[in-house]
Image (cartoon, rainbow, N blue to C red; front, side, top):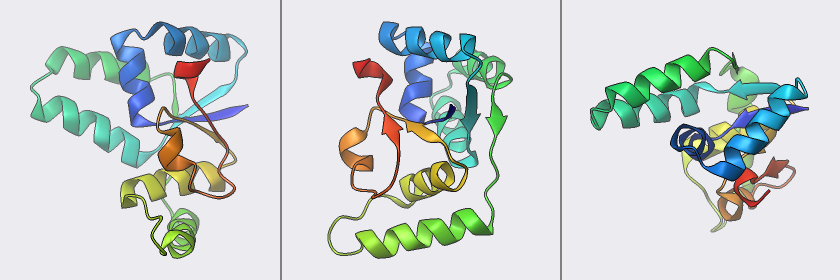
Length: 133
């Protein structure tokens, strides 16, 4: 299995959310591949930097060493544009989330997110909520 972590899941792990941490540990024991994408990385470090959360930023950077960074390339950009086009009629989601969804889809990952209502609008996106596991 290949998992792409959304920002809220990383925050859950760092905060010690029991369900999310347990599921994360299970998936790493199974040697399933954990990915992060540039947009999620940006969102996490941005939040810690503007909040002055130096220790949380350090904890994140330690955890991040266990993951693989996906690329943000033409294929992801094209997919994000296609998703935007399909959602353009009143079901739009933020550009960052379109990029996250596109990155998951292009790279054959299941998106791990607590924002299932939001990402549920993206047809063909595989996602799971570890909070509910």
